[in-house]
Image (cartoon, rainbow over all chains, first blue to last red; front, side):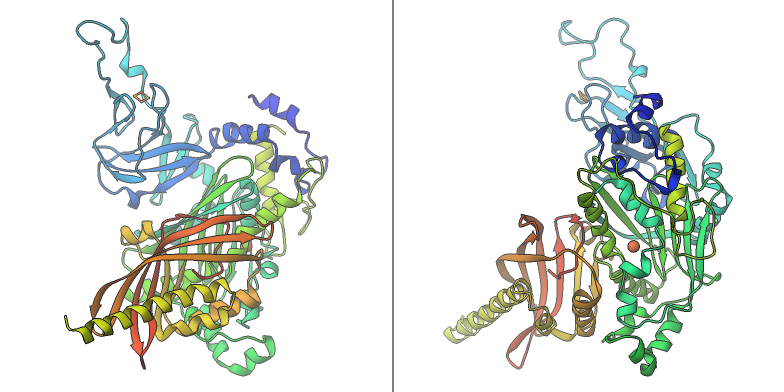
Length: 413
Length: 163
Ligand code: FES
Ligand SMILES: [Fe+2]
């Protein structure tokens, strides 16, 4: 499907990014167009972290959009990536989620590939007893696994189907690289994974991540327990294109805890108190004083710092009305036992069961159910104006509009 | 083994099984306020994926290291968190004492949780294994540790009600 054809599928409302026609969340043709023009198009997609495949021969499987891919570290230590689809007849080549191997053998007819995705062996290539076999002129070198262009930044691995793609750092922009460096400036370590399936279009989750308007309205944990958040300053930072964003908040969890212990302060602000406020104990790790930073990188990556709970979220589309979210929980290599415990306890705040994040798992489904039968109806996205720009407050939908601006360009709407 | 020993062991086994059944029925009956009382004060309650458990990753979707944190979970469930109404039905089987050390019984059992949402559809929501450490306080068994190791790697939508 070409970009031209996409334009025929949908005409964007005249009001631009502040109106989103519900058709984009339910039309299978649009979904196919997104896989082709966005995820398999000119974008850099999150593949994983270097620390997940530290040694030659290490590999992990993941997705770009809904396409299964493998990420490997070859014998020379270079990171490679290819589509996880046999060049023979399309079987999944690598079945395990991670491991270490020199070669990948497709189980179906045992074609063998190396860590770069090049075809190294075809059983019965010459037939048996002179019978069968591949025809004259069979060129093994033309049957590699489809290769993905790979670049890394700060230990984060990105991949693109577009081999003429602009350099990763340019795609991310200086500002976004700066925010990544806040966290990835020293060696990280993986504390584990969480996976979550949501019955809604992938864009509804990504919009939710960019939606700083809903935070204090949908997530009532902090206000219910009277954890004072009112004084906290913050804002929204966009890159030049508006496709990436960071929502940041200043404050200190420990100040919260001190204030929390003064019972008169909490008695007027809430009916409920935490039996065990040790959940709020943190350590100030970031000299800039930002305690909450949610960064989205187009089209499907989120980096999260909620106090000391650090994670990368990878959004994987699974059809027009379904998507999966893979959380990679992080700490630093230098972490002592105490900070690891702090991260574990604070992880109660985030993830599929998180006190301040579990609502996000259900909210996209509410929209998906609400818009049934109304593809021509549009949403109204004018909080904080109708433009796409950085703002020093959070009651805004500016970063949502930034997403749609980039989306429209890539989709030709 | 002497008859008395066998009878004592049977009684312990019976009490442990009873604890496990009472625990899941408490959740299924939506009596969450009573749920923390199955635990000791300094308990550890953890819901962790089989993937993380087997690869020695500590990250858990719920990690509570005191009874107070369990009570906070219940208060948040009732008063703060927003989610679609649903009910659970637990099926527990293969309850087995796998070890005994320092007055603590290690007990393994299998569980399956069916979830029914407001639309009336029931789904297999989560299956896995309980790895429990149980001690007796004044002849009553309590969970000193309850590790819920789930096979269902992908959590459907969200998790707010304990398993
Ligand atoms: S499909 Fe892979 S070897 Fe035949
Ligand atoms: Fe949210």
